[in-house]
Amino acid sequence: MLQDQINEDRIRDLNRLHREMKIYFPEYKDAFGKIDGAFCLEVLKVAPFPEDLVTLGVEVIRQIWHEAKLRGRGYVNATSIFENAKKSIGIQDGAESSKVAVKWLVHRMLESNEQLADIESCLHQMCMDIPYAENILAISGIGKNTLSGILAEMGDISRFDDVKEIQKLSGLGLVAINV
Image 1 (cartoon, rainbow, N blue to C red):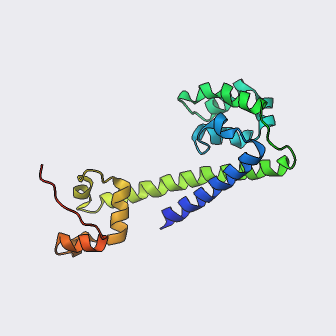
Image 2 (image 1 turned 45 degrees about the horizontal axis):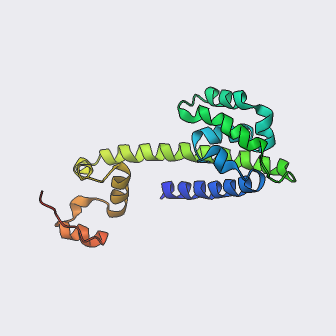
Image 3 (image 1 turned 90 degrees about the horizontal axis):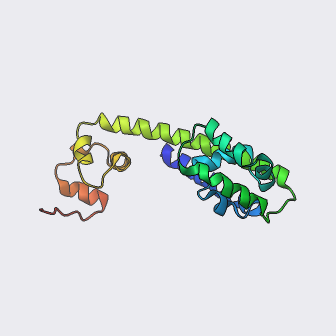
């Protein structure tokens, strides 16, 4: 339940971030692509709006990513981000207070990402302590996240006498396929 609550808060913060960016940097999707990606969040912590990005320049944007130890294909996007920032048509009025809001939202999202990773790791470890968890993971299409959800909802599966009881509780009409 805690994982769901943190995820809901993260989604709420992401929607607020989208709102701010649409007002002050409407081209942000073209520039950054995925706004909740690691590359984007690192830049938004320092320079959330077009005039900040233009002031930084392409090399400083790349330096931000380098200092954050981000590796990958994102470095080539620095030029695109810079070009989109230069020709942005975003509103200028009230940008100072929105910069504070964007930086705060980015900080909360990064914090939520860490919390979710910690919770997920803890859940996976707890699930693996359950004797029959490995048998459930052997089912095609069931991963550790699904397993933790199943165990959270059903509890101790060994309390059921028959597979049909589990089917009834889950509301699924499962059938075996002989290959």
